[in-house]
Image 1: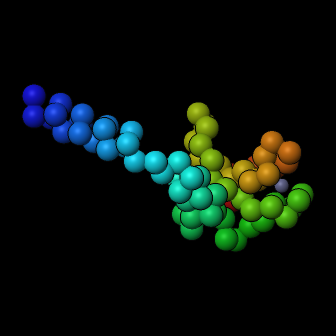
Image 2: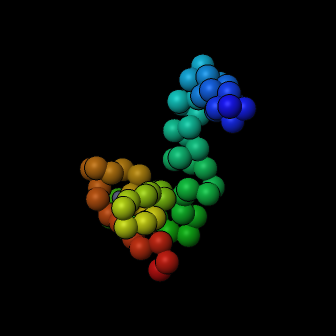
Length: 74
Ligand SMILES: [Zn+2]
């Protein structure tokens, strides 16, 4: 019962707090998600960490115009 109440409070906070834009910025320019080593060789865009069912990989931030991807371990 106690756990459920906490979950509800957290959900209410998340719903009421508008961080949509901030979240987007973290995704596109946050250090953890952007490759500092590599740039897209096709368009010189930034490589951003993306998730798929196969795992994480680098993808060009200009997707879908540029569909370059790179294995995250290489
Ligand atoms: Zn690109």
